[in-house]
Length: 554
Image 1 (cartoon, helix red, strand yellow):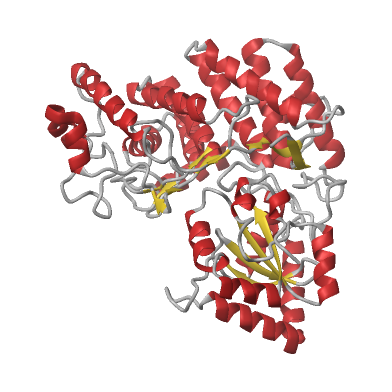
Image 2 (tube, helix red, strand yellow):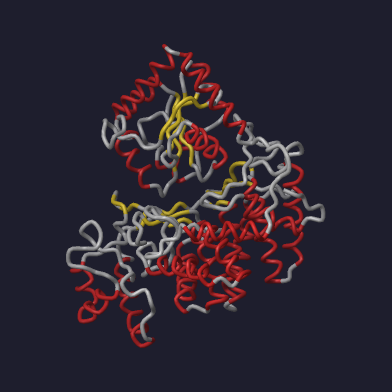
C-alpha cells in the first residue's frame, strides 16, 4: 500500500500526493481492495480552493500519527468533488439523511461496496469546536465496524433505503408549474430578502443567482417594482462589497457576514458565470453603469487569469496563499498610504480602509459605505489608484489556480460570455466563447459526440454527466443565436439526443444524473434541485429541449 495520487490529473488530488496517508483514487480496484483487506473505507471529498479542506489536510492528513492510524484501520479514498460530482452528490445526500449539515471536506465511512454507514465534514485533530477529535473518530468507527457489525448494517440499510427513495416518483398527478405558481414562488423568496444589505437571508450569504433571477423575471412579467428592488439591492451589495475583487475583477464564492464584506476568498468559475448572466439580464432593463462596469471588469479577469492553454476556462482560484486565507487580497492602511501617497486619504474613505482594519486587523477593499457611483470625475480619478494597487498586488505570491477544464462549468461561462459579447458588441468576448467551445469539443468529446466531464494535462477524465450535456447544449444554442452558425445547432441536437437515449428515466420520467453506461455507483441519482449550480433539469434540459424534435415532458 502506498499513496497513489501522483498518477491523477486533479490539482486537488495532486495536493495530497505527498501525504503520509495511503490515499487511493476512487475505482473498482480500490473497493475490491477494501473487501480483500476486510477494512472499512474512509472517503474524503474536497476541492482545491476549499479553505477548510486545507485546514484538515494540514492538521490531520500531513500528521504522521494520524496518517498511521488511517492506514492501519481504513482503506483511504480521496475524491475531488468538482471532478466527481456524481460521487459527491450521493454521499452529501447520505450525510444529510444522517441529520448533519453538508459541506467540504466531506468525511464519510463506507463498507467495501461503497455503502455509507456514518460520516461528517471537518473534524479537528483533537476534541474542540464542540466536535470530536479526528483520531478519536477513527478509532471509534473502526471499533464499531469490527465489534458491532449489527450497528453498521442497521445504519447502512437505513441510508441505502432512504437514498433510493430520493429517486422515487410521486404518485398521482404532478403539479403544474404555471405562471401563477412562479409569481407565488418569487413573492415568497422576496420575503426572505435582507432589506438593509440586500441578498437572500442572513450570514453566511450566498449569491443565489437562481433565486434572484426568478424574482427578476417575475418583476418583468408583473411590473411589481418591489421585486425589482430586491434584485437590484442584492446585486449592488455584491458588486460593492468585499465579495467583489475591486482591483482585479471577479466575485468570491460567498460572504461570511450579512453585509457582503468578508468573503470566503476562493473564486469559482460557475459563480462568476451565473453572476455575469444575471447582471447582464438586469442591465438590459436598468442600464446601470455599475453593473456594466462589473460585467466588463469580471470578463477582464476571466480572460486575463482563467483561460487555459487550450482555450477553455479554468475551474477555481484558491482562497489561500502562503497558508493564509485571503492573504493575496487584504491590505494594511500603511501599505495603501505608501503606494497612493497624497491620494490615499480619498481612496481610504471611499473604499472603507481603516487604521485598525475592517476585518481581522486588516482591510478588505470595499465600497459598502459608498454603494452609489460618485460623479464621473471622481470615478475616473480613482481608476489609476486601483491600477496602482493592482500592479503592486501582482508581485505577491498568488493563490493556486485549479486549471482543470470542467465541461458543465465551461458551458455556463460560454453562455454568459457569448450573451455579453453580443449585447455590448464585444466581438473578442464572442471569439473567446467560441474558442472555449472548440476546446471542449476537441479535448473532452469523443467522435460520436459523447462528452467527458473533466480535462487536464492532456487527459479527458470521467464520463459526461447530465449537467455537462445540458449546459453545453444551452451553450451551443446561444452561440447559434449569436453567430448564426448551423454547426452549433447541430451539436445541441446531438447532445439532446444523447440525453434522451442514455439519461432518460423510462419508468419515472426525468433524467438521471449519470448515463446508463457509466460507472455503477450505489444508486443512480436523479433530482431537479438547484444547488450552487443549476440542476441539469432546471438549468439546461428545458433549454436544450428546444433543439430536440422529440421534446420530452419533465
